[in-house]
Each structure stands twice: as structure tokens, then as C-alpha cells.
Image (tube, rainbow over all chains, first blue to last red; front, side):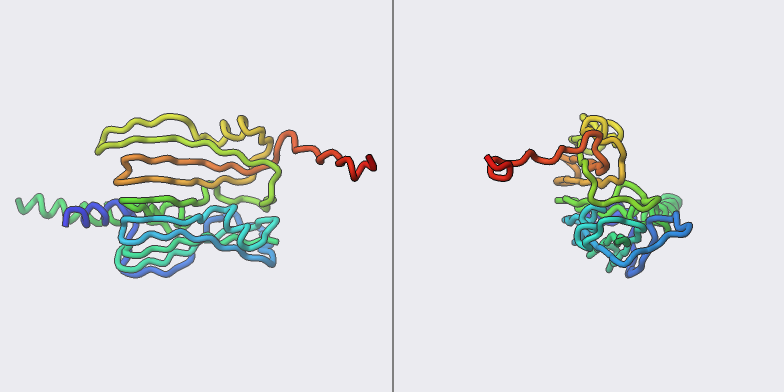
Amino acid sequence: MAILVVALLSAGCMKLYANYKSTMDIHVDNTFLGKKEGRASRHTVLWLVSWGDAGVAAAAKNGGLTTMNHMDSEIFQVLFGLYTQETVVVYGD
Amino acid sequence: MKRKRLAALALAPVLLLSGCGSLGTLYTFRSFGLLYTHTVRPLSRHREAVDVAPSGAASGNTKQIQVQYVSILWDDNAIGEIAKRGGIETIHYADLETRSYILGLWTRHTVHVYGTAANPPAASPPTGADAGM
């Protein structure tokens, strides 16, 4: 029980269920989004194991981008972090 | 006893919800595996269109050993220092790689910096066959 409490507290940001998108780049003055989109994710299971490359470089590579114009993020979480997936979405050409 | 319970109840939401922002959630979202973590996430917020196939890349890391509240931390992962050491003239963006084991007993934070190299590698000289030798 104590381990569970520690896990819940250290996870930082927990929701019963979450599936939403959020922006990372708030500088959107005349931003041309571009035609390509790249994604990269990292995952956490049972608050115990966390893995995955969700870096900008990986997202751009996955989408075949050479120029990056904007960044967003996606969060999917169930049962207070029993499973969490965080995805970086980059837009560009 | 009752006051302690009330205090704990009041504190719990603060602890549980701390770090949750609507903007740039990935920066405040602290997913962490208690036993094992090996993740990469963006370190820089994007401001303008940048080249994602830069000519220069360099990295640096800090290491930390922590047992409960006592920790030892050494080395550096400052973006400026890494860029300087790696010969990067213009920084485009940076990622943060985290490796951590067993409740943070051993943690390594590596910053990867991407940008334009001060002296981009020159084109490889022609081989003997190309040069007609």
C-alpha cells in the first residue's frame, strides 16, 4: 500500500482517464504549419517502468521532416497512470 | 489525530495535481518508472521554424546517485556548455534523455543538442578512382 501511495504521489500528474492534446509551442504568430507531421512516444506502465524516445529528433525523423514549424503534445492515461503514453507531434515540411 | 487527517486530505490534491498545466503538458508531465526509466523528451520549446537535419550534434550528461534524501550529482549537461564543447555555433533544439534505476538510486540525465556546426565537415576528398588516378 505504501509503495502504491509513493507511486501515485511521485507520478506527479494523474487522472482517472485522460486523452487530450496540448500545445508545446505557444508562439503561433503567422506560423505556417507545413504538410508533414511526425510523432514519437514514450510509455509508462504501473508507475514502475518507463521507456521510449519522444524527443524532437525522433519525431522529426519519424515524419520525414527537414524543417519543423510547430510542436504539440498528446497525453493518454488510464487509472491514475496505470498506463500513460505521452506523444510529441511535430509539424513541418 | 483528526487535524492530521484533515491536513493530509488537504495536502493530497496539491501533491497529486502539482505539475499539471494546460500548456506544454509534456514539460510538466513527469512520467517516471520507479524501477526503470529510459525516455527521451523535448527539452526546448519551439519558437521558429528550424532545420531538423542540422550539421552539428553534441551531448553531455549529469550522473546522480541518490539514497532517500541524500544525493551525489556530478558532471554537466548545460546546453551552452555542450554546444561550445561540441563545436555547435547555432543551437536549433535540444532533447533530454533520462536513464534511471530503482527509485532513482542511479540516474543519468543526458542533454542532446542539435544545431549548426561552427565548422561543418568538408566534403570528402575524391577517391583515387573519382580523381582518375
